[in-house]
Length: 338
Ligand SMILES: [Fe+2]
Ligand SMILES: [Fe+2]
Image 1: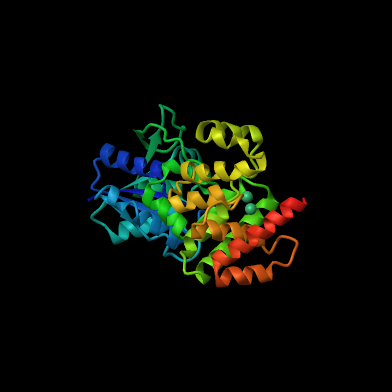
Image 2: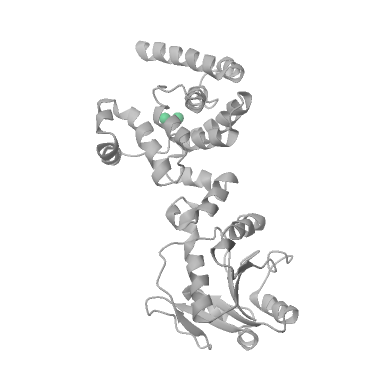
């Protein structure tokens, strides 16, 4: 059997990886491609998401081609792992297979630094992706296959950019397991707002459990409710002009709810109407949907705010609607005084 190996952190796997795998299957006429997540990358040093999550995300894309497989050989190995160890193990374990090891352009440039590079090229065929006719020079015999550039990287996705390059099943996994999502918010708001968002998310989750609602949905609403809060008036205005020019009559500090509800949909693919509705109404408290009440109350009673909100929180735990009415009243009193 001819097997192409696509090694990588896959933190997370994205459409660029899938395109590489499909290109290799076709160009090399392979029977299978094995996605091989790394346990620890000797030449990189950012800390990786736990391997079981990275493997599980790959498992969610295996249905994209019946020749896709996941290989756990490296993640199951203890301690530091080098490609030479993996290649030796593969050739020992599967002597009947021919292996093609796929590498990206950056890896071709570094190839001479790989442990036992001379041995490696004797044991296995190395194949580099030639993107737009550009491929790094190498003294080693590395076969080239052509693939158009897919303009995305896992590091961009980890901060919440280009989520359109994730298969939907992987996006769902990321939200289900809350991978990277605090970072999505952290890169878009200031530190104070970020701490408030995390605190509100925790309180939303708590109030949802107390009131028999879905804690995961409430957590996401809390985490993203102020996603547009650090945007400039000009940036928000561009969204407002397209989406809801009629809402420009409200004071500018109210706008981040309207804009945020569209951002979670269009940028972050959180398309649940209750999530959008809750964020849309969170500033004024103009919806009595249970999730809208939860985030409105959690936002106003966030323990990081400088007052004792424990009684109000206790009321919300008992009955979110009663808590909502009380907090709204107090808020209106406060605004009148102000
Ligand atoms: Fe807000
Ligand atoms: Fe808030």
